[in-house]
Image 1 (cartoon, helix red, strand yellow):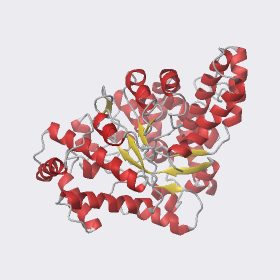
Image 2 (tube, rainbow, N blue to C red; image 1 turned 45 degrees about the horizontal axis):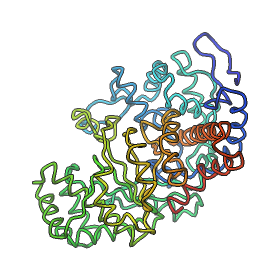
Image 3 (cartoon, rainbow, N blue to C red; image 1 turned 45 degrees about the vertical axis):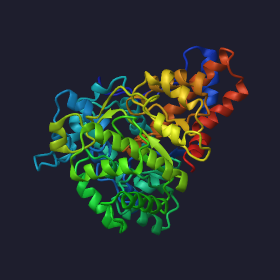
Image 4 (tube, rainbow, N blue to C red; image 1 turned 90 degrees about the vertical axis):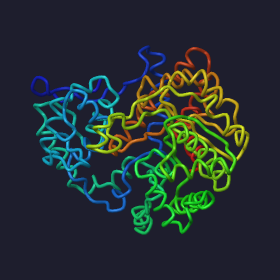
Amino acid sequence: MTQGIADAPGTSKSGLDPHRLLPADPASRALALDLYNSVKDLPIVSPHGHTDPRWYAENEAFPDPAQLIIVPDHYVSRMLYSQGIDLGALGLPRVDGGWTESDSRKIWRIFAENFHLFRATPSRMWLEHSFQEVFGWTKRLSAETADESYDHIADCLTRPEFRPRALFERFNIEAIATTESPLDDLKWHRRIRDSGWTGRVVTAYRPDSVVDPEFEGFQDNIEKFGELTGENTASWQGYLNAHRARRAYFKSFGATSSDHGHPTARTEDLSAAQADELFQKALKGSCSPQEADAFRGHMLTEMARMSLEDGLVLQIHPGSHRNHSKAIMQSFGRDKGFDIPTQTNYVDALKPLLDAVGLEKNLSIILFTLDETAYTRELAPLAGVYPVLKLGPAWWYYDSPEGMRRFREMTTETAGFYNTVGFNDDTRAFCSIPARHDVARRVDSAYLASLVTSGRLDEDEAFEVAHDLTYRLVKQAYRL
């Protein structure tokens, strides 16, 4: 094990174990380490994420450790909130105008004092990887090291080599996708493009705000949608044309995918008259919950047909009861850690879409899930036969060593490796990107080593699959 820096009691240790997540038995560990070493330095392709394109456009120094590491990361804030620490005390901005802590050192001290809450979580592994590999900090974070660690990281952030573009290049990121609403003018992407910087930052089309009748401000959003496109979005055909126009605009800024975060995996294939009837109800705000779900479901099929026209990969990640706490939503807004997994049906829910386009050879649909019980029963069998379907990686709550291992064990026997799409880090936490990809590479290497040592895979094949899972499949699946 790598030796950490000794210090006062409670402040020592750190240093990342070079064999972390690899098998314990010597034969499997040796092979897993060889597999990992063969892929650990491959470029990062991050096709599904939520970093801020403004970082890369302006390339200004990150303001301080708390604003970089704590405030944007709901994995961090939700754990602390679960132990009674107010989100305002963590610096999260409020939409209701209430108090929020503005002293980043105080925010960091709260984080450091409560770092023990993250023991054995993926967040702990990502954070310590970031502290050590990005900032060279190897002591354990604690109340005793709070100020010292803050000063160390804050000093790093003043240097040119810690600006967003420099870190992007140091992380060996070949391409990264951000995610924007159809109402976004993409000005930061335009600035990136016009700057002459060669880093590849593309957008992804996330139309939930103009597809979901239950999205806050839906009617106003549809009106703005029409203003942006010059289409009559009060009419069904004008509304569809507005989507086509914005998809084309997003493609002009490098988009290769659309991204759909619906509460369920329901799809529908309605007639134009039926769809228009639902759309008019949505415009009036008179949809029942079932009608809103039906409209979202039909729009997935419409988006799939548009993907056949323009080539965008369609990502569906359903099954989250988003913004579960009404009070937090009202006070702090969306995406503050209160999105909770729900049970999700895929076999029946996807049938209308698959009846419409499921056998197309030029369409790519990537399915995600927050319901692991669906892997073996539904998702792997579906992806194992329908040409349009691929399985997205272990996602969100299952972006963890155990979750990744379970994903491989539960899907490979039916869908194989080549109906999956590599790894997505899906994060707003910029410095955790290399940490997350490192975990995926280690877990896949360990799994492949177990297949070899148990006689289920030849060793030369394992090295080829390791490369495919790390690099080739993601570029192929996302058309990057």
